[in-house]
Length: 193
Image (cartoon, rainbow, N blue to C red; front, side):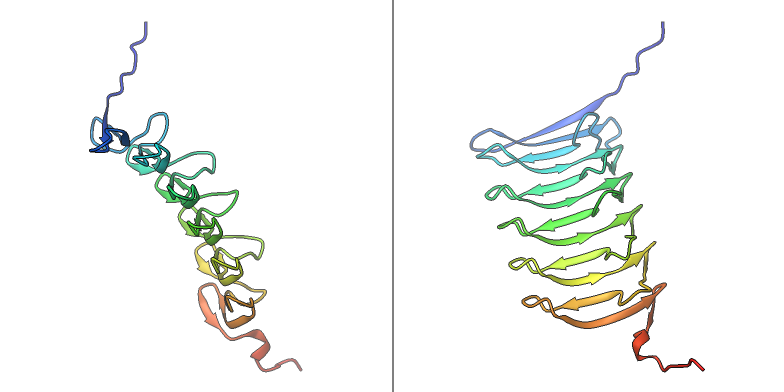
């Protein structure tokens, strides 16, 4: 008969000093690494409502969660809005089905920041921006950056675009190819014969 595999963990529980309600739970391996064998390695609850306000998923010390799901997220206890979430695999920001990091306005839930990373490198294909910032009230995009494989790059237009937060009007633009700032192709002299 084969021997069973034995794993040992320490679990630290935090309680509210007044209500004695559970407010935190932290799992660690016998060697002290944060590790959630069947869920988050660390989570926090609101002391009055008991609702989860923070989760941190880790495997053997590295932030990690499979399935394109957030390894870290924070919830506003009043509005219940998940206002910050980040997908990480083996300690690296990574998501294939959408932005690896999303920040929302905690009061209204409006997405105000998104970034697309794969293997901890800014990268988004399809001539789409890898970093997007929005006005928290109007939702209008105020800033965007185009990245490919960790380089500020866009061959079809500006790689950095600023917008007026009220009107959406395009403000100063910057052009980059392979992380090198270039001139706007429209401003280059015509060199054709």
